[in-house]
Length: 457
Image 1: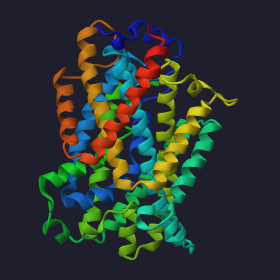
Image 2 (image 1 turned 30 degrees about the vertical axis):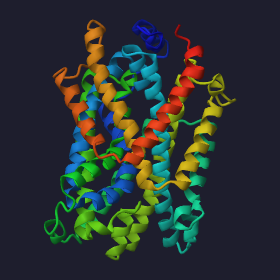
Image 3 (image 1 turned 90 degrees about the vertical axis):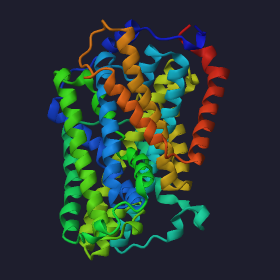
Image 4 (image 1 turned 120 degrees about the vertical axis):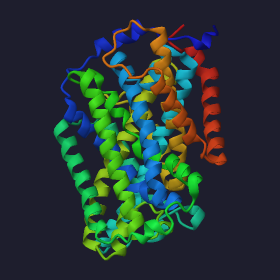
């Protein structure tokens, strides 16, 4: 076997995880609220409008396709997380089951995916922020949130918010179940408010006249777009070490969370496409746009305020995830040692500011749709590999203790892989080119630096 396929042993990973074990405090309801908090937000506030514009009312099937794929993958995450409770998540699972170079490349891809996800949310946050200012009587000149390709200076608010959050991350962060549960309540409250108010203005003819204007291809294209809306579901499965009775709590929380979130997404899209024609949707603040179209300016202001607060949390979580995995890879010697340097607040400051500045540039100068599609490619491939890894791990390490087992092995992981492959079908050639360029850059880094400095000989 080639030396670049060197692996970490399961024993070393388990020993490492055992030395860092946290006290289990999470119950099923805590996991459900945690999952809803991770999923509801950026997708429902930013991308529902764009997806509805691509597929029309048939976008509900786009959410069902993406939701089923993510639910099956989440079950795979649950098994691996309950077996290998490591902070490295996908990267570590692949390191153990397949080998170093595959783990490194997917880790590299995930870093790019998390950066792009944060940039996408920042882009959408800017739209809601501008709307909120307008509602308060402050008109921000359009040139300050318009891309240079459209005659502006760039998305300045998006750049500023990313840098501010980078600063906060560099100072250290803390969280609690209480704060998270309150934020979830606020987010869900805003979504329910939109559904209730918006449903009063629905015109069913908007659904029946042209339910699927772009056909099956449009539904699949939108499914690829809305896949981004489910990013964060893996947060549930990676909490196995901190969960009481994970064998029962994890699968329950995953299923309930995915059902609740999918229902919210479908209801929001039905209201969006029922109130206005689908081809008028497409902005990063579609919920506010629709409410303003029917004269509900006060409700639009409330939604804007909630979105501004909620999306900031989304930006922070995606950036934190990217920083965490980059730090883990660097700790294994596969990225320069400087990225493991921590400041006085015990935060990896170098990698934090490096990824923060990169995110700011992408958020300020690339369009929302392209950012989301690129982030989706990275995540879809990573999730498909996690499903594949579950099968490999099941065959290679059948006797390792598992807190949870994927039902219907290996059928469920295989179906998950097939669905993810279908989602990749609609990715544009430009996005594939950018993706492979990023992978090639990662390979260059690996063979010029990582291979020589890896801690696994």
